[in-house]
Length: 414
Image 1 (cartoon, rainbow, N blue to C red):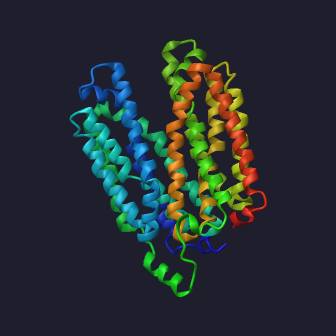
Image 2: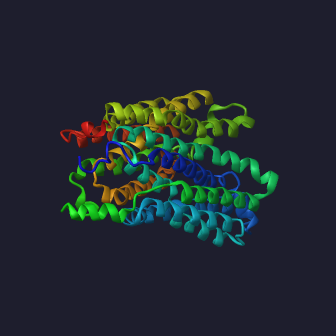
Image 3: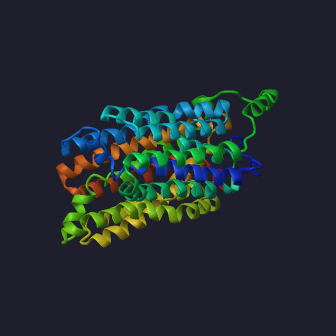
């Protein structure tokens, strides 16, 4: 397809991948390290009630994802027009400043406003995904995106651990300053090390060749696989996050010693991320060999199957193992979704369309916990797993229909 990246890729694609891997990891660590101490920080800012502190913590945490979902397509379009490196430089510098300002907040309203601003100016990981997707050799796209996804998932895994360890040693406000400094290092590395061909030069070549200059949705030759990927991106995070509100209560029913409930809950929450970190690059390499659509359908079906026994476990260790296995299956979805979209749209619109995929991802992160909490409260906690399993199975069938007759498998293999 003409929309595919050149078979040899950009000259510096490997170096760009490793810089983006470091930048994505460091920014995700900085954005998630506040999870363990956010309610405590809210109380320091003047919210005395424990219940109100939890509510404000949820608002502050969700504000970032809401803002990011709103602006991701905009940043994607800007990346298509002015270059992907510029967007990464902007995101890393903006996040370094905002993260440091979080340590200077004087009240909870400032905290929420700064978290919302972090979502508006951020987006390093999603920008890095666009850059790697458009610069990597076609036969290595799945592996490269899987490697990048491993860095993002590792950041989600390490962030809360760092956030639990640093505040007792240096204080909460200093923890934010450390996070800002970490992102500033990513800003320096991005500015000095990433190399990108100027967008204007590529655009001039297209005009000289008389190429189609339609942009955005109008440039997509076949919307069916692209829309299927947007749906799947949202479904992925919905399924992964739906368990979050119920996990501690669910574990308390499985663990007899109340002193071990939080420890086992932490293992359960981390197991899926750990599985994804270990498997993402390997599943991406498999997608390069057999085709991303086949991997997507298989991963969705496996996740659906693994969710069913999670509703009937009798011990915390059983749940940890099943969540780890689910993480192995989930690992293949994000890089494969990006790969399908990348190979289905022209280069001039890749950032814009992938921005919508990021928005769908964030939408799943917001709606998953809400739906999981509602279903768990009204239908029982096993119902959360069973209903999510049905949704994942429906996603597998829908993707099978979406890719039928499109020849997408052949376009995804190197």
